[in-house]
Image 1 (tube, rainbow, N blue to C red):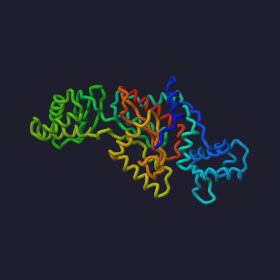
Image 2: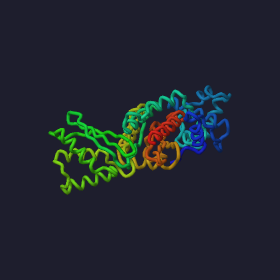
Image 3: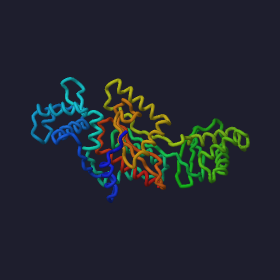
Length: 373
């Protein structure tokens, strides 16, 4: 699983240090073993693939290239690139497409990053603004934003809060639904909706909140949950049966694994837009299923912890995708103590527009980090 090449990381870091943030245009790193002509042809094939998803032939290349080369010369170069494992022919006598190895070389050594405009940065900042919203709402908006900007699936690994609690409240919404409001000691507000037990009187919500607020001071959510479960199991809690169900449901809705809180994915349907083969549909369905598991949360956070900035995983480089033909661009974000607490990114086809999406993911991750602070 190769992270983004060092020159690209340096370019992102340097761009972020400039006023206004965002990623500027990265200087491509030299690619060993390929001459200038081969690089020009290879770059043109990859860029055409990103634009159309279709194989590129020698005649098309001769028209696109800014240098005078005959179709025969281009075919010879394409054959050499195919022999090197950078291109392949999907059909006999067809044009060429980049292999995953070729895409990796392009991203690490040839990719030039687009520059976010001031309007784009302002729009992203505005949509990620958490003012007046819960943390979950802000992260869901960030995932939706990334999906819309990338035309792929946006994902956010939301943090599992380890802060002490300050307050919890239950608000009746009607029709058997209750809003649970949780406030942590560091000021984060999170909301969840749970189902209310049939026949629940309004006084039960007040009783449940009073019971929990009397016990939560100085305790984390996990500590409070263990205490309440023990008291209910030992019948020490002064709660009737209906109120106990509200307390248990209200705490259980925040239950999570040891490392991750929740995975927010928006825009999954965009992964299916270019899919025609049955085997690709099956592999993407498997990817959807894996995105639902807690194991995925732990693995995504592990990936985010491996590097300081944006990481790119193409196809089989990441076992999460196996043969799904997808790529993931992901960046960690940090809390006010500079600890990595989550990750944000995009999952799309391998022909995703890397040059545009990498700076978007990088900038959004930095905004989320400032919001967490």
